[in-house]
Amino acid sequence: MTSLTDIAFILNDVLQAPAQWQALPPFADTDADLALQVLEEAGKFVTSVVAPLQRVGDEVGCRFAAGQVSTPPGFKEAYQAFWQAGWPSLSCAVEDGGQGLPAVLEGVLFEMLAGANHGWTMAPGLLHGAYACLKHHGSQALKDAYLEKIATGEWLATMCLTEAHAGSDLGLVRTKGTPQPDGSVRVNGSKIFISGGEHDLTDNIVHLVLARLPDAPPGPKGLSLFLVPKVLPDGSMNTLVCERIEEKMGLHGSPTCVMRFDDAIGWPVGEPHKGLNAMFVMMNAARLHVGLQGVGLLEAAWQKAHAYAQERRQMRAPTSASGPSLINEHPAIRRILATQRAWIDGGRVLAYHTALQLDVAAHSPDAAQRAAAQRWCALVTPVLKAAMTDQAFAGASACLQVFGGHGYIREWGIEQIVRDSRVAMIYEGTNEIQAIDLLVRKVLADGGAGICALLAGLPASAHRDALVETTDALVQAAPTDPELPYWVADDYLRAVALVLLESAWSRISAASQDARWTTPAQAFHTWVLPECGMRLATIRQRLNL
Image (cartoon, rainbow, N blue to C red; front, side, top):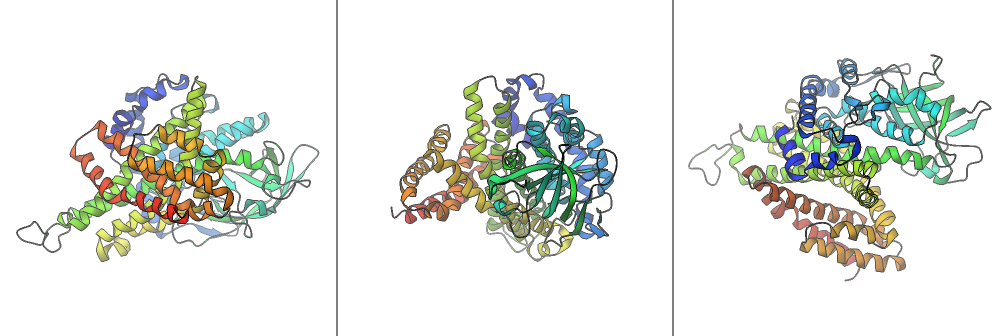
């Protein structure tokens, strides 16, 4: 379980988060003590109710029979307790049945949940994104019927994008929506990789489905968004069916469904042919949560490895008079653990800061602050999603190495984290797509002005200055080499991530010189940050500089 002491230090001492959110009108009465009390209770719930289901979720998994999905033993009861206790609604508006708390507290909750039981957490993972999508783009009638149920988590939601032939290329979507005289639509088509498309956790499931109207232009600009519930308002079952659930590498506690819509009844969300605009509200919220999944999963792996290293003895450490020594005394193990700790702590600062900026962008009375916060979120969200999920998998694998052969067998639970974490690099847009989004659609689109303004607000460093120079060179070279940005996008995102982490560690070091923080700080500068130079050199080589 994540240390609340660490979380409180980052929120209060490093980020001064309470002062930031209390400057926003909706959160003026939310002080640091209330926030800590909420997180303490969240920690108790996660530890006592959700974490114990981690192993049964993996070993028993979900079961499919005749279109019905049964979740692992205990999952339904845990979810019912979760929504009835009000946890899904932490940051939803009070008028929608929520608690009206800052987004960062919800982010911390879901970080804890992912680390404790990633498979179970997939069920409520899309709730806030679905809530935001419907709140911003839904008709009043749809809001009246569905918004509170989604805000509170009484009904779960899905995001139905992908089709078998399309993958990430949503412009190839073929699912159709046919308008009806009463304002509804009839949806026909099949979707794959739908997390929680069918289950026994809630009485209803609200599907948000991308499809094409009959007059839709081709490509992504022809997509519309429709709300298609499993159970219709009159209590009858809609004409949609789960055809099967996928057999996956990990996340066995989460049903990944193939869904077929057979003249299913739905209603438009947002304007015709602008479904992606509405869906991106949901996807962006999901991407920040996936970045936090990376933090939580890496924390869980580190905790297992750290505990094992303090009790397992092997050989004699170089500075020990005799052996066998605790493996925590061996430099190789200390390097692994300190390196992953550096990623966790720095990533947590960036993720929490981004969650704070979401609220600034939405609620600050100052237009300049709103604009700066929106710029931060637009640029940093793809970086967090990609960098932290890459590291969750690589770092969990490194933590497995601490166990030696014991890590490769099921008994210790570390191999499950390695398997479960791998998918986060793929969903909500593969990490390669995140890198393209960052460099092509955001950095180059405005000639580098946004990213350079963001970097100018970070502490001065040689790596930051080199990133600015490399950005300028890419802006100059890209117009004459259309493939160039796509070759170097991954390197560019990784370099941005490392410069952001450098700034995060600068803030941590300014707040404390305690050994708890100085050890991973040294690890970051010794074993993590030098990668930035390599990434920038790779880009410069491609630029022939």
